[in-house]
Length: 151
Image 1 (cartoon, rainbow, N blue to C red):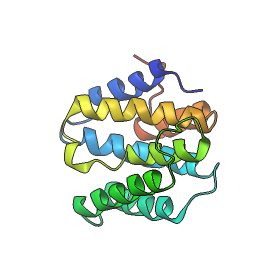
Image 2: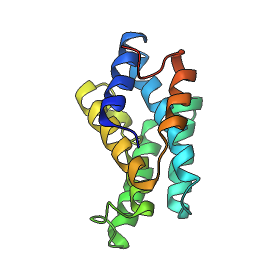
Image 3: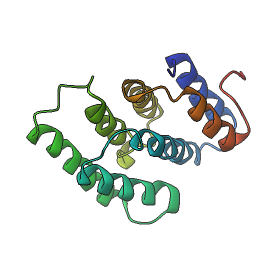
Image 4: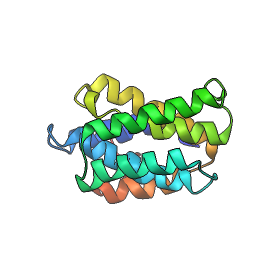
């Protein structure tokens, strides 16, 4: 499982090796890539598939706008509430949706404290779905040629 120590290291190392204006977008790109691994472990509801497509296009391809990501986030929250799944964070499918929600806050991406909270929560939810430690390390290494064990 991804430890919160590794999540913090991912965050700090990236902050140190990335221009300040690119850091939040790079972190969201990294989380999008991680989410693809998570999503492959659990059957997804169409609202999740659509939401991820919108968020991934926004962060990784620069397509779309922040309003579309926010609307998709609202759709995901509405789905959780309509299915009465909002409080069941220990179920894999719900944890997957909650991990997705972490990459759907473009309006607050400039707030490093908020991004760190999203980052930490993302990895907590990933741990509910499965053990992605090696896969996430490989993605991180590809991001900047670093591993979380470097400090």
